Amino acid sequence: MASYEIEGGKPLNGTIYPQGAKNEALEVICATLLTSEKVTISNIPEISDVLNLIGLLRDLNVEVEHPQKNTYTFQARDVNFDYLKSEAFRQKSSKLRGSVMIVGPLLARFGYGYLPKPGGDKIGRRHLDTHFIGLKMLGAEFKFDTEESSYTINGSNLKGTYILLEEASVTGTANIVMAAVLAKGETTIFNAACEPYICQLCTMLNNMGANIKGVGSNLLKINGVDSLHSATHRCLPDMIEIGSFIGLAAMTGSQLRIKDCRVDMLGLIPRAFQKLGVRMEIEGDDIVIPAQDHYEIESYIDGSILTIADAPWPGITPDLLSVLLVVATQAKGSVLIHQKMFESRLFFVDKLIDMGAQIILCDPHRATVIGLDHKFMLKPTTMISPDIRAGVALLIAALSAPGKSTIHNIEQIDRGYEDLDSRLVALGASISRK
Image 1: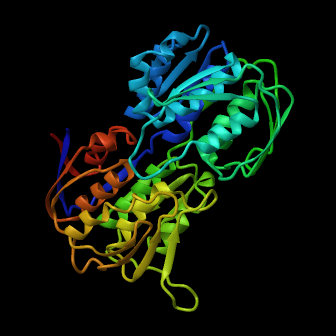
Image 2: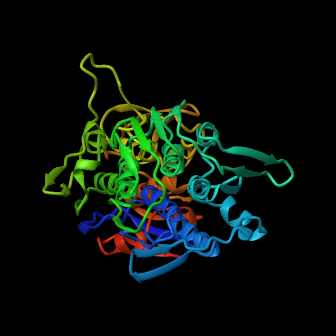
Image 3: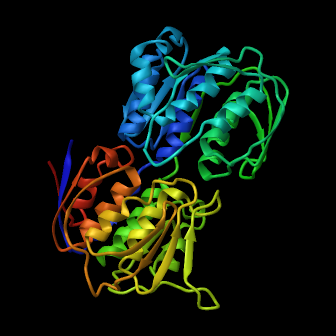
């Protein structure tokens, strides 16, 4: 179990480039299974979750080339279906939640899929019902093996249909879209997720010859085609990492320039930090955070305490609530953080409380933060990273706390952030990996 040792309390300064979007990369890499021709994807973050998915595709006999850093080509000419039933596949896919998104492409192109229960963060219940209900409505047949905890899926005759999703699941929408592009007839998906990453997936599929209309909305119409062809695609910058850098600058009183952010695709993320009092300037496609020793939380017009809650896009992504909560600990004022989607994601606040933060955990979904206004700095401590986003939130807290902190289990952070320690060291942070 690797660890970070951090000497906190030091302001940072400089320019940082966000990595490619993890969640988009997982989707578009799975989509390369839809064609036998070569697909080139650039700005892929070379992080453990993404590299594990690429390794899984290699094991499926997909030809993968790595011509330069963050750029990969994929050609799925002959998929090895025997590997799907192997113990090696069960072990690899069960550790990676993104593996669920290979099912849609495999059903669409080959009429067959196999899936052990996928893994990922332990942040509460994350049902696959949206995926499976949508695929069943397209004509897929599921069989569950209770002994192996695995699903065998037959999809040899997928047909377009009308699908009203019970929830706007991002990965569920991606899986259903990828299955529908080669299904016979028209598929309509209502209440589809419309995150930028879904837009990017649909754009790439259209460039491969798919016929998807309504991109960017929650109503998608997909006319199935016979086959898809080669394409090139570039992933967006990671909005979660951009938000993490904004929060880092605020907590450490640092001046940072975050380059090439695709500000037009960030939705309400900048505004969420501004509600906490964080100042920023938009210069072209860069976000500049000036050094601040004080920031104040807004209240509602009637004077009541601000609530920041996650919601389907264009609402605030749940992946950033951990960072927003940490930023609030050193603001002036109070805020209620409401994590609606995952009931275990706020449990990391006990570590912040140990550092001196004033937080009331109301229940598994809600925490009230009383900001310290930088009058009482957080105290250094030793802690364990429970998941990707909480791990980064704890890292931000440690960088703001004068003295030596240690974070164990940083493999969780590595799953979502590429070379994070070395990039922060270049800005003046004191972080060493043990």
